[in-house]
Image (cartoon, rainbow, N blue to C red):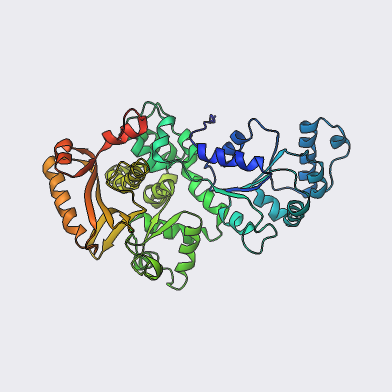
Length: 463
């Protein structure tokens, strides 16, 4: 049994509760398992509400269910004796001020498209209630509120619910050390239901073996989610496995998959729209140069999908047959390298937190990777208006003072190649551990390691 746990989300709760006071139309969407329903239940905990999960059923069954909920809400037995026979009648019967939540709303629209027109008329002429339309089909929910939809332009608030940040997952694993939290985040991202699937009494590696290689819940989840959104699953599997293997450019993906170059952009765009793939260009590009750049790289944006397509899907046949020696050996051999990639993502979140707290030499307005030919810098933070830049290398390893100095000197060399002449710049390093980091800081370098991450998580002292 999965025990519900509510972590963070203070900003989302505040925005929802403010919207409820204004009888607003609220759109809430995001990938499955991210915690949308749990957030909404928390938001209406102290206010009258009617929650309905839309199901694959005939419309009259939906109306019967809504009538029963009206009875429970009002105590009026007429809703049992004579159920409402239309959505217009249901909305008219709903007591004023009650928050209406229609969860998995895209299912209702698919089975009864006319409901959008009913909502349009209600919102334009009769609205007396806050209405929340929630859905897991990201593409459909965005389409429902887009131009051409009957409810286009009528929403007051649109919330895309994102996974929890790294800093919050420790609340699920109070006895884990910082390295164990990095490993856990690298596999599950910040998806609350996945985090609840891991047993806090077991190590991350033991949990990984049970949930993935011994075919637990998380083993089949990735393809279940893709089937929910996509039709040609085999093609998308091929693309994601190619990216998980390290193919980053369009040409590399095309060559690795064998997919026609004229068709591949459509598949990639779909995965980007779903938030599964992420396209990046060097952070220094802007305007038309950024849009037209052929120097783009593609990454699996979601850590769960990244782990699955790196370590699980390529060995699916062996796992199905229970032949675990090769999949587990591959995992043990390459997991640390994979963690290096995820650690860059965590380091970026760390710098964003420092930026919010004014704990950096300047306030940056954008941050990302930079690369040109064979040269690359893990993170570059910029304030273009002030002409200031921060260059940071990220290493998932313990560094001696000598190694740290070598990396920082090379970073200074690469910083000169970025082309920001006349800018004020700083150089920094993020690693698992850095020997003599206080000595290096005294010389003007910016140095952070996992000890600093722990301070940020515990809030025991300023970073």
